[in-house]
Length: 167
Ligand SMILES: O=P(O)(O)OP(=O)(O)OP(=O)(O)OC[C@H]1O[C@@H](n2cnc3c(O)ncnc32)[C@H](O)[C@@H]1O
Ligand SMILES: [Mg+2]
Image 1 (tube, protein in one colour):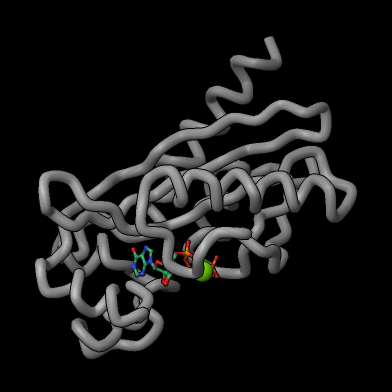
Image 2: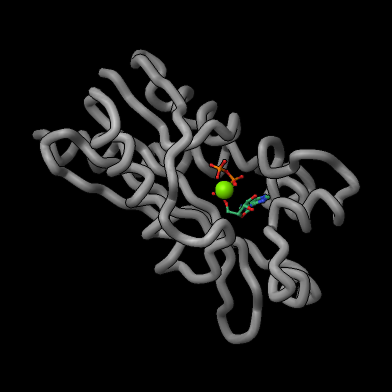
């Protein structure tokens, strides 16, 4: 199958590559049509769906995959949240949510100033491009789970549901 991923972020591309390991995979830059920093589950999921559809409409492929990270608040606690969407040329759309883990309380003020989580993480961890490597999930799980591994789980949920829908 020819699969397009709506991102050039290696954490996302490598995750798709390890689940669809016999397929032809390319990452392309597409607009998420949501904020650079989604702040609700609804917005994050919508970004993933928009990226997936954009891949399918932009170029010839069998499947488009959108993966989106965001933040959200539950009972006053800030979390990093993750969503994935798979769109197929026949009009099928499949979605799945990924892991959420809590973020430090003082991140809310930085986000309100307009900073993206990716930049906040680089400053916090004193590293570069955390978003393309271990991710917030890697830093805050002491590197037990990386951003790629977290997206692998989301992509498996998408692939499994897609296979079920094709039966
Ligand atoms: O190039 P794209 O595909 O846009 O990749 P991205 O790293 O910007 O990722 P998202 O747009 O999906 O995420 C929206 C924002 O949230 C940040 N973010 C989400 N999850 C993160 C994580 O685990 N670690 C670091 N930043 C994260 C990300 O860097 C962005 O600033
Ligand atoms: Mg982004």
